[in-house]
Length: 427
Image 1 (tube, helix red, strand yellow):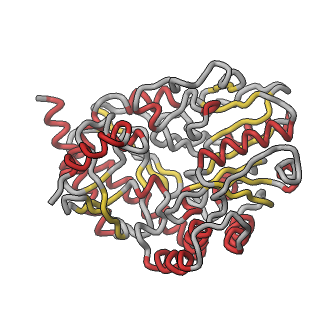
Image 2 (cartoon, rainbow, N blue to C red):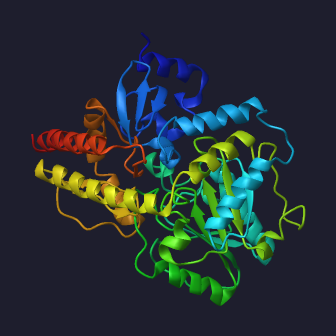
Image 3 (cartoon, rainbow, N blue to C red):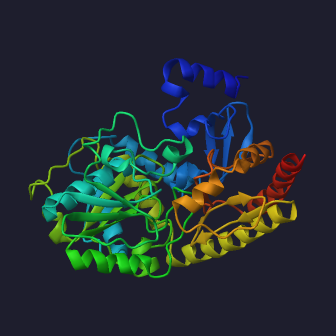
């Protein structure tokens, strides 16, 4: 039997850092990454045959869990007809119709191949549609790895302790403004767009304050800027119709990924017909992609969206709320302090030795994420067969495949893990 260590060493020889996305390297938690060979429902199995209850779920993409039989069957049918054509297909139309039917402010959608590409394209469109240069983002929000948006990013950028990235020039970020999350900035007429995660889910979980998104909408309207919701995580994960329905605030542009691909690489951005009319071939803003609207991704995404109802989301949110409360209690009973903020079915996890309030911005979140407790807790959970994201800035993703037994086992494991960490911290 091969080992995780052997596979990682092989990867290091041919892949920079041994991984194709930095957070997978375990750099922020230490140790050797486990190499996954299969997934089923709420579980993944590594090359050593170890099975884990998985709360990574491809960072939220696997809404129904891994290898859902209906999704697999749909993919087999789609693959048998061809995997890519570089031409229009019925599947992209059907997926776009499903998305626009759900989100009131979404009249048209352009499909792309990743969340990064979706946000990058939406920003370009906003600049082209308004004739303005400046874009404002919020500290700690991660919007993919395009040059202009890497400044003050969360997720893997924060976990590696980077302020941005080498190779990103001053010119590339000269038109990017940064403000604290949950603070409505004062804009002027040089701002093309405000880009925001409706729920900040790349600095662990920071929920928007009451009225924050609504006042952001008002401020954009005051100066004629476009409001862009980055829903790569929240889109069809937070709610049946995304953040617009959940918070009652309409954006001008929306960016999607993860869930809409059903486990395959995909992204999308869209908004009103008026704004989208500036996009080529109808308008002057160019964007293109050979694999955009890929028939496998659109088939899988449509299958996933067709299988979840508004009631399903409500029930999942209730289950996650109970799970989060039980996790916090188990950790607290074992000698640490935990906060497990929840928005819909999205859940965060902060650990401390002392009492604290839930963070409201990146600075408050960073102090907790960088206190060193998550690293030990992560490995203690992994030892018990529970896989959390290998970094304190990520959130937990509970899929529809996680059973009550899975959640109960996880709560028990959290108590054991917290006890280990607490004893080590005080010894």
